[in-house]
Image (cartoon, rainbow, N blue to C red):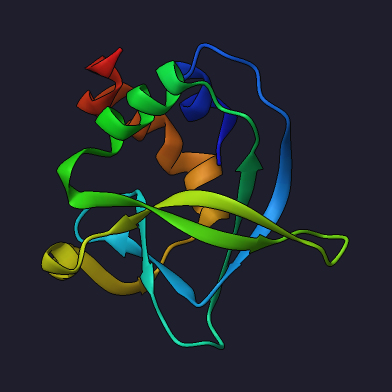
Length: 128
């Protein structure tokens, strides 16, 4: 959901809009700065970005970037106008749930400070 990360991965330009994913929780990865999502209760939700019409080539890059810890799952997003939209997102697999901390992930903190470390240290950018 952050342009500096997104643009390092995909080669296409895709329409984007804010979206809400109901029934999921976003938490910090233990001892790291990036988030994971996993299923929560019906009252939980995650704010994010919907990118539309992603090419197969860029989807393959995103799959490789997310790696074995995640499964790409079909979900339904709520858009700001109240409509819903079918999409896919990367969800932490149950067998790796122990990697998520109990701390809520802070998007503002990531955007202002943690993203710099992530962009310089994360080896997942080598998937291209």
